[in-house]
Image: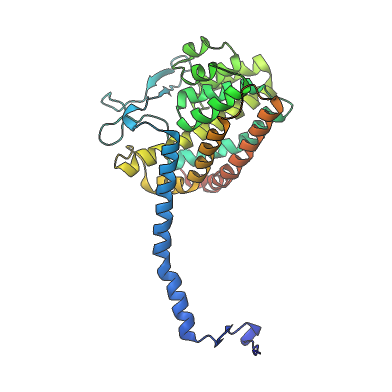
Amino acid sequence: MYASSKGVGGSDMGLGVGGWKSASETAISQSSMVASLPEKTTFLFLILLIAGGLVSALDGFPPPSTLSGTRFVVQTASVKSSFKAPMMRANGSPLSLKGGEPFDRKTFTAGSCLRDHIDIMKAIPGIYDAYAGPNRLEPKTIEAIMLAVNSVNSCPYCTGLHCELGRMAGLKDDTKKINEAKSSKELQKVTNDKMVSFARKFGEYNGRGACFEVEYQDLIKAVGKGKANAIKSLCWFLHWGSISGNTLLSFYRGRLTGNAKKGSNIIFEILFALYYTPLYLLITATTCILKILPANVPRVLSMGMGCVLATIASLKILPIAILGVVTSPFRKK
């Protein structure tokens, strides 16, 4: 039978099975916890490396030298004088990883990550509206919109996931054609749908600027304000997914192989990878599971999967978006 005692203020004095803990034993215990921190950090970093390797291996990524580049929009003050051009360095050569391997896909910086997450947070209600609300769209249209944005951003994770979802929605061979379209004209050979054409423009303009606003107003005239907002929200959803995926790819296939993307920040990349790698492992696993499901599934199944994906994504988007709002007064505009 053990005695029970309280110290000053009624707090426990550290009674254990073998009796009272001495002050020296408590100090040793605390020092052991501090000593274990480097080991925990090393373990966490090893887990990150393994997880990243799994993501890369499961998706079968080609080496950076074989990755196709994307085209970016260079916008001037005048709508008419805006033009589209490859992302180039001052000397005219494509942006590349150190060592000369091309990697001109869009990736996040710390600033653009916070800024875009705020916009994506605002789009969350519209995403649900597109899947299951008053302005819901047909599953085929939703996946065509997603693939049209990805035809610009070229994220391999989004290619895998949305090509499978598009197949299940009934897009058939159009999934690949839309996803691999190199221009708006090439996309129009596959579909003349104004909603899908707008999605391509969203990708080219990154959802911002005078030229994009012209495209958006044209969409409102064509389909109405509510449906136009739902379409734009879907574009933000894919914008987030694709650029996040490319940022991870740049880290795992670039930074960790000694070919860091020029202008990238190692601290941001590590934090981003720690935060988002588990989600993209889940996306990769989901893509593998979807491969065994049939085409032309019932609409309610496509709608349900869309809402589940949006919910899981929102849980990751909201914390960074809130951080972006809090830090916005201290960041450069």
